Image (tube, rainbow, N blue to C red; front, side):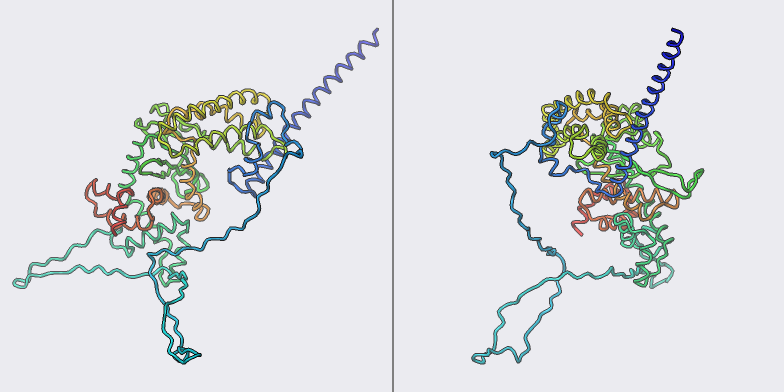
Length: 516
């Protein structure tokens, strides 16, 4: 009996060690699985297309017909085709690429080709040939940017009797006084940098090839002065924006080398605000941080609702100003797309199930995008709300059954944490379903940042924010950014009242552009 007790004790010790090892192996297996998912996500972001659109195959093969089918254990692969099943494969028809049409308003230069006089006779009877028309072929030719010098001559006058009274004609105020830069040149440089992402040092080289020695430092100073010049317009745009029913917000990093109290390597932020209903407006704002004080400064109590991502820095502004906060379904969908890329191929998983239901919400939004707000509200209550309820039930059932650090676990957790904000778009027909409009508005800045990398000073970052604001707002209102900036730089220095400044807002300046 005495020998059995130590043996039982030893067995229990071994069982405990075995259980401990199994727990450790499960933990390591979960960790390995999470790391493998991260590697796959990194490879996808590095080498695959970044589009979030679902492929036609995914939409056509019934994968997104009913998400709950996989939950019920139904087969994820189609059944074998019977004799009655037929598959129609449409024949391939090569579509002819349309010819590029040349705008009718472009000037035409005609080159006429004629037969030599010796060949203008009929070989049969020797009669002189008569011209009956032409066979035309148009080509597009490009003339590189042309430069000219504008000489401002102020006529001087004197009294012929006493020769004591001298008068000189006045000249309109210039965008930058005593500078060689005209409104057209400033608009050209700003458009090249902030619209076409062409850094100033490259523009300097291009000017040099044209025989113009315009140093990059001069170009940078001109852009800073131009950005300061348009500040009254930016103030008006901000006031107009705060009066809109919904404001989109987003932010991205920017590096500013010479910031007080910060190292050159530290990150600052470019914030974007936008409204895309009537008179669309896009505003950029530079800040040296991502603190919650920034949206507190940008917003006020007149704002009804904001559409933002999951960043918690907007929370205090929403609380203090009683702003309705809308969640972005595109961010939720993106996390399920990430989870889908790392799940086993050829088999529908939870990522597919979540995407299926979210896709139904987007399909409805596509069908009602041109409807008035009251009709959008009605359709959302009637068609989107049941999908939302189904998605909620699926979420509560799925969340406890996945590792929280896995890709699908993160997607489900994000959906759970943001749920109240995500479903709030159902409360108003004017509310958007996602923040894609803000992300699209900030994209030109992120593209330009890859080329010019950083701003040298806070003054440069503020000027960039102002000029990006005018250019993106002009684009949103269907204006040519260069034409619009040229009008602004020419007329804003001479604007003496709020009314004359308001006349230069993009939706008002379009009248001037059409008349010019």
